[in-house]
Amino acid sequence: MLTVYINYPNPKITVHPGQRSAERRKHCKPGQRVIEVNEETISSELTRFREREYRFNSQSELNDMWIDIDFNDPDFEIAVVSHIRKLIGRHYEPLEAVGITIQEQ
Image (spheres, rainbow, N blue to C red):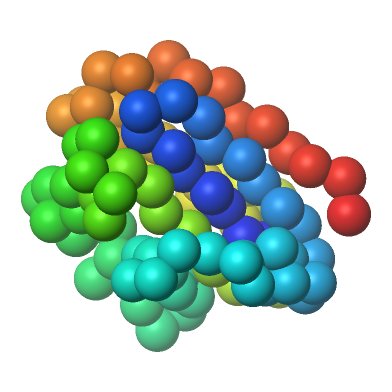
């Protein structure tokens, strides 16, 4: 499992590997968006990203997002992050070329 943080105004995508990653969100803002991607939700969630259902802008409720990705396969999980970045980057130029940073556990 890994947790991904996406920030739009300050473009960055940060991956936090491991089960303890949810600990990092304890101090999140009220109403924080948290998306779960796993075997049951992958198709619908990728469609939501592709169809631009998840919007980003400078408003507090839309400027960032956490994504929990769980497939018990670290290589596939990173590939999913890369694909989500590609889908978001089609509509949000600041996130198009941003690198994906992997934090140490």
